[in-house]
Length: 553
Image (cartoon, rainbow, N blue to C red; front, side, top):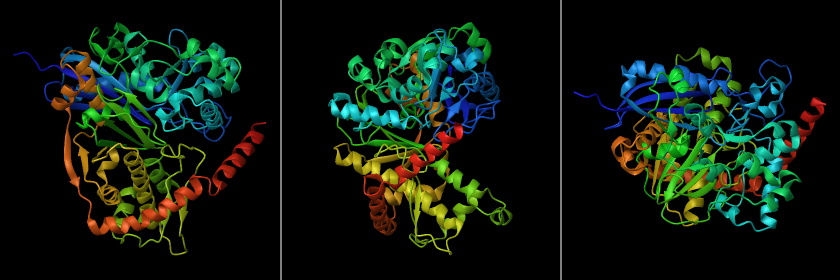
């Protein structure tokens, strides 16, 4: 009897990459493996150097991504007990917007000896926020010129995206910019390594690359940003656009040797970790918002109509599944905020009194509190605000601390702050005419029952939970099945291979009413510090930046 066809999905996250082996007929996950990035996030100094990076920088080393293919894929196959010859396709997803300056053949510039010590030659991770001044100028000029594409991004272009980061390279490292032939999304670079062919995926092009209605911002606009930058699209960016679920190419012999997979199998067009998760959660219809909760949270959903949503990350025709408008919003810091607090703000005595992980210990202590008992309100802006303010110079804030405030009080306030941030996004979508009827949670934070109940109570929505612990990797595997021809489209593949547990967490009316009161306080602080009432966060960020420049000199 013939063996069941298999596909492999590989999810490249912020700190690690994970591979999953999936059965095509029903989405059963047979084996999985994780590969931690050896260099992690480079945000203090370049590898092998003592020179400190300025504030707001976040880089990575591309060889870490190849290590994932080299180690995680064979390990997942081994755990599955799978014969590699049964694999018919591989799909990948990546954090976005994560950019690699590369030569004509795809070599990252940081791998060239002459650029090994230049930070601009490395991967600019999604959370690289040092291009905020460039993003500000892009937004100002776009508003002055009434550029039609600006509304597709909620009225603001983020410092995390392709154009702002490229303009920073152009202005601060002209030698890198001149040597760069391709400004490549990591999602496309990894597919390039698998196939030997560079195909630019429609998802990152639309959401992160200002590619709307078949075109980018024009030369006149780019030239007004900076003389000489007008040819950026022509010379560094423009390339063939591949649609989601389409075949990018066949696995090359070199990539086959790297991964242990058969040469010639289908390789799907690249995708973004958040967007690829929606089919894995069977969330492909309008009104179903997926929150992929990890170090950050990305909110994606489909809509039947095009609407302009203030502060959204973007809306793209077919950006998630064909035939619908794909919407994106997000929060730049969620799990990162909880991790920062545990690492930096909890006394050693707490570790001594618990046999649990510190997150579990604080969650247990926080769960004993009544809503509002801690007397705190926090703003979840420790990594800036991605939606709906789109301002990465904003910073975290906690109001109400006293000498009686304990770590579990602050921890719960931070959990609640991220839920308030999600509610702000949902309310903004609804006000713009995009209904949100269900919230589906994916990512590791779905394992925290207190956090999930807080989100249900704060948003007033039933929370469904994806049935897979590896949502993005499963989503990539679904796209691989489509690229290999096992299903006619992503919707059909999602119905057969996706998994979700509906309405696992229900809002408690009394809790929801209590959180309505706290959310009103959150909104007051949100608008005061985020909408121009008090500019202190920007002034502090500017001071920090200037002092860092002085230290560099």
